[in-house]
Image 1 (spheres, rainbow, N blue to C red):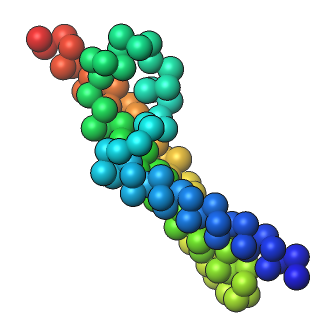
Image 2 (cartoon, rainbow, N blue to C red; image 1 turned 90 degrees about the vertical axis):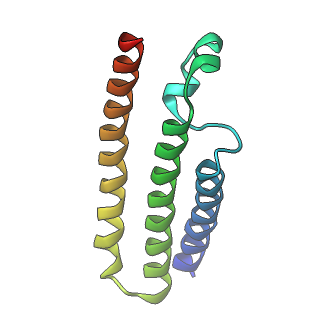
Length: 114
């Protein structure tokens, strides 16, 4: 019974993350990205938000699928889904770091080039 409750919570969170991901892919809604959140209001106006939306969308999609796999594994007992879920979590973190560095590098090149 406890596994069913935990799985239900994980699946509910996965659905929420999927909704956030879809909105981010469409570049709608609040931008849940540290670079945007910590930017000053003046920087936010000048900022090209497209790469940040794309980065957030992919990270939230990976996390959503990972939680979906974990919830499914809890409900079905398919333990082989846990490593796949872990790989997706690690991939989301690696992608977030690499893309943040790439976005910042491109931003600096664009600002120095003009």
